Image (tube, rainbow, N blue to C red; front, side, top):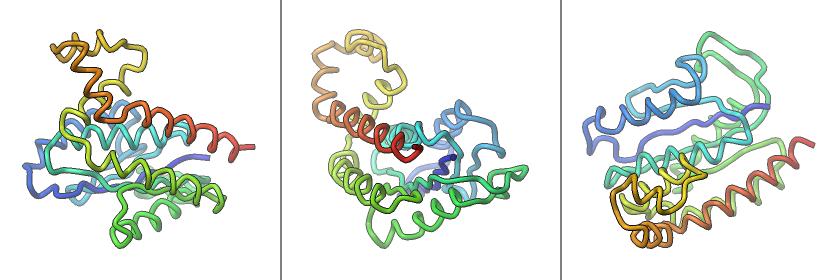
Length: 203
């Protein structure tokens, strides 16, 4: 199984593309090569292939990167399934994972949702999507500094709050406050729940 994430940037027209595109490309480059593993097209839309275990963490990292630009957000659909054909680029590849991701992405705007998942197991989809909806209640409202601390902590999972404070050149107490405002502990709980659910899907 693979995971395909299809997404677009919300309110992208309010910034110069280069403002957010450089950081997004740099992050996607850590996950694979373009256009085989990821691609950005039509200016503000993207698609990438990742391991199912990492899909939600990747989606949240992308969200935390984009929301560091005030007023921007990202809409994403995760499709988990098989890849029946691997082309030279991700846009030429096909299979259930691509179809699930694409079809789910097309429904997000109408549902006013910024994150959803589709797998071969509808019951697990319903459970995960309910958890996602609840998490979006605070993730969609991250401030720039909340997004920054989430991104930094996800990229440095073994770092202490003091070490993160040193990177940001702020006090450890300020990092603690930012963690609380961003509800970073809840993000980790959501990720743990996702891991358990996806592992059950593989059995």
